Length: 451
Length: 139
Image 1 (spheres, each protein chain N blue to C red):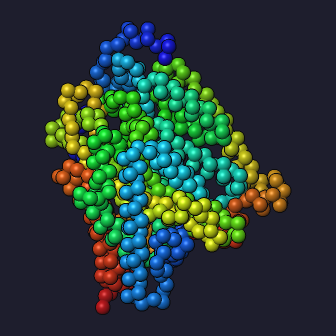
Image 2 (cartoon, rainbow over the protein chains, first blue to last red):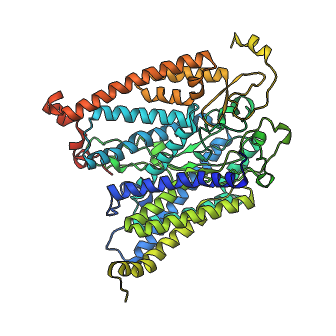
Image 3 (cartoon, one colour):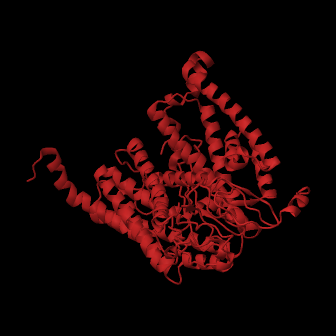
């Protein structure tokens, strides 16, 4: 059966909207189950509340200013981390990057996921013994790290693990106090805009360097390819390293570095203080940068003669400075966050190699950075803390923004930031829903009267 | 790949992929098919990965066995490559055994409760009864 352009287009868009929705939905679920009152915990994200610790009793001005400064601190930290990543990539310190990513990934999959699952188990009263739980968690974590970074793995598995990363990290981020969250989201959107589009931006130079070297950008990227389907055309092996690179983004490509930021969460401190202070800051710098030039074939329908490659980058929470320098075993539930990486959304130019037609494979589909997943989910999670009405409104805004970004991607054909439009729409929908929609709709629904 | 060259000699021509064809013959390295959208791995590498995954499963990682079978599903089902078939089948068997054991234990623990391990041990192990706040395992 011949595939029309609608099949391809629809599949690509669905391929990216589905995981984003899944991630957001799981985050909202976690928020509603575990933290329905929207309590924030400053210990969880030390970096984000370094300057100002929000309290209910403060005036609006204090909160606003404090939130702004907090956000600026985080953005500065993220910028620093991204530059560091760029330098590491430039001087080919692959081992460093891989090592860090593996460590970060393991701490997310083992520690953070473990803590969240533990809370769920206790909440629902599931009878499960600690030994099997640790055993299964260990399995989950180790296989996750190897699948994402080291060995080839089924694409569906990697996609699943990436969604888990996004959910878990976003859930931890929802513990940032409210005003700071919104300030942080807006600040990150602006940072993303600057970092990806302006000539001096760290993400832009990173993408360009990767393009020059014709490698994958070091990052956690979600590839929205359909998994497990018998392909119509085979993807040819492009040299020794490239083969599995299509599957495992950082793995085989020697210099392909993936930046992950994982929070190194301090385990339960000896004094028994809240260990959950760890903030997992995972930053996924996903740069859906240019892949090997000739690796993808354009689809037969000429109108679709475009290879979509949107990597979305989002700068993520900055890493707590102490984490790489000191063992960071604070007695006060110190938490370290490592987060960094921005993702850049990129649409790659279709370097069509018509001569290699028979060997090229399907277009890789859209790639979105994990940072974007995380910030979208944080937005919706925070909206869900107020009410589900605002959560749905924010969700619609974000998906609309994502669609708009994909459109722009099709037009611009280069790396684009995925955060700004979505965050702008999501945030404005949230505030509109909260301020305008709810006072109208709620009395109307409840009392069938409005006055 | 010592025994491969003579096999390759006969069919060294690259055959264009046809619809539904499950393997692509490439000249130098005969590739295997992954389950994931047909990504192609050279045979040597595929075997190496399969073997590694199988052996690493013995480090208390039955999930790795499952992923091994999943990754090389086409070879598991209708095996082309002898080595891959051998290791995926072993992985599948080991995974089945390990899962059966784990499931048995989980059921025993959850249904049997204190009667199985004794009250003290049960209280210690059973996570549903833990107080996370005092243990410091909460956000």
